[in-house]
Length: 581
Image 1 (cartoon, rainbow, N blue to C red):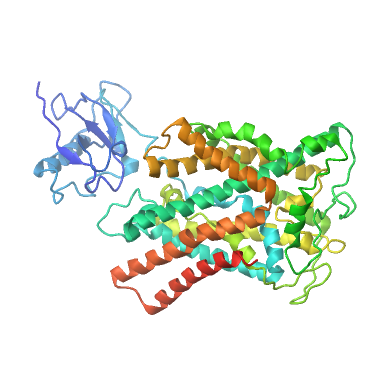
Image 2: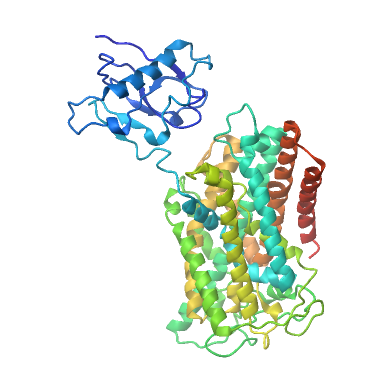
């Protein structure tokens, strides 16, 4: 047997770290002219970057793929390429990178084929290249990821800022968030002499700021995730209550009015908590004093089906066991419900706007009975909501890695933000403009605009049901992300034990229950969590990373220093302003 060993190859050496390859590993058990595999195949991604394996890449060009006859052998051209790569490996020791096979010798990922022991070859459909997405898929993946519960609070935020100022702030905040997201996206590539191909933004923060950057980015990321889970619990309580109320009324043929404040007709709009103080935030105070709009003295059903007293507790029975699942892969199959729900919401808003018509009057600075000024001092409440609404900075690097054309990343990111901003603007403007004033005041627009429609509305019932099922499937995914990040950093294990996981989940669920019981205002929760996580992950860290990177490259100039310093100041002001609204 003419056996010969394979050269020692480091997967951290270029060009192996730059793109995936298929390797033949082990010994070749025949003459080099008719190579036959006597071992197994392996992918370099499955081996750590600092580990060493006895492998060499093998490539068969598409034109050299022969028939299905198992007796056929690869052509001479493929054998020559195999020998060439083998030659580079024998030139020097694997620790010397100077004579590693150059990039033009290693084939592109889409040209990688597996050479089987029978002498045939086929392309790997499950390779990284095959999983790459075209730009249109990447754009809508970003759009779908950003579209969340914040869309329900956009009309309320525009009302708090004033119609004209709200539209301007939405456009300006979107552009600002896009620029900060662009900094995050390109930050790993600005680090020289380090392989950052698998880095995320917390890794970049650790590189520039050490352990402080790593742990602070983790803490603020937890704020955004746990804040979203609390909002989900409040909304699930709301949707489950209204869904049950609709079914109960339909089965028992009960005709009831949700509120004495409302319009008449088929497309009824209600004002559950009328604002008696147009200059303040009275809708929140009335919401808290009302106890969720339940009157348990009239009907026994209300005693057991209360939006704030019982429904948040019922959800524990369903969701706490789901949070304890070791894997969240089952729930990931239902992420398409998010896209369906958002599309249905857009259709719902369009239908309601067409039927209700536009009700607008422009009062630039003075208040009126039915309309709000175009410019209001409560505008920081909208900036806090928008910070979370446009927030995708902690996962944008991962999303963009799947883009087939990496050179179009900036363009695709900009188009995605344009679509997200247009969606928010469409929903916010139509709901605000179509809200019937008079007879209702614009101040009646609720933090969840679906609360402005009665439980008897069939279209709104369908929207609430879809959103309820979507949130039931997404909530365990958010809990899984919290567990992976927190347990991984603290214990070095994503699932240290069932007791650890249960304790963490009880704390998260307890926070949701308490907020849904005593402070069920998603607008305030969203703006506080958005301003808090945005302070670090949107404004401070990206701006500091950009300044340090430009200084090390010698390209820092005073306009850039002033602009990025202003970004940090805006982030701090955005958070502080939430406490004075």
